[in-house]
Length: 397
Image (cartoon, rainbow, N blue to C red; front, top):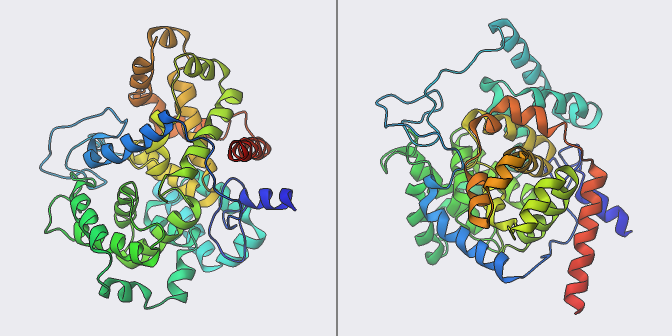
């Protein structure tokens, strides 16, 4: 029975398309307990530091590219900041190929249950190739299963907006709403619709799920969704991401994050042994570098074009994609013996991880390597069982 429950954490349920942890298809619900692996001082301190650093929202990205403020937005709507793209997008497909892909995606969304139950591998393959920009909002709405929630609770969002909410949480949201992507055309000032819609989505969720309420790390995820979807659709996507994809990540104590930090460390030992040994030697706790990566679902980590491609896969395959991206960044950034020799301390190592070479964050590099890692679903399951056992032992003692 335990093995069955464990496997279900790495799979998805066709009956209700909301993802769990590590295996396909992207529509199985989570059943495993979400307990901490460690409660050591370093982990607790890094969680606390994360909550403080979120207040400086646009400065926590590890993307090192900066730009002067532009009078015209780039192709993603940024006027400046770390996410501004000075160069036009490189077109690798012809217009005819793009239109053909769009038609395939429209056909899939019109026959969604059939693809999810009978042809999931084709769906996953198309997500990995990249969802066409024109159909990405619709595809995300279906991949998350948000379309079912909106259909089931047709008036729920408007009802939530009419409720006052917890005054303390409302104040926290108001303090944070202007800090999310402040160089983007949607959020550049309070008069733009973005900040108002962001407040509404975060407030509605805090009422919808009072157990979680509001965590600062949720704000960039909600803002990112609002850049692509109408507010009500963005809300239901946000609900599935917080409650299924990142289940228990935002509860007090961030216990799930601590457990997954230990999992990441274990997986790193398999994929990049030399990097693992370096981090162990300099006592670099994983929570010191992966907190923003996982809590914000990489929205503060990757260049925008890379982020969109990664999210296409993340919403299809679940949180294992975040693990894989993290492993690629870690492995690429510290793979060189020369780099490890120069990063001869905790602070120096963290500096490398916070500012990896741009080439390691490019979409082609990330997408090529995350599916070529020497890691399997069985590795995820094994590491999860190991961490669960360690946690049970710690509780008994």
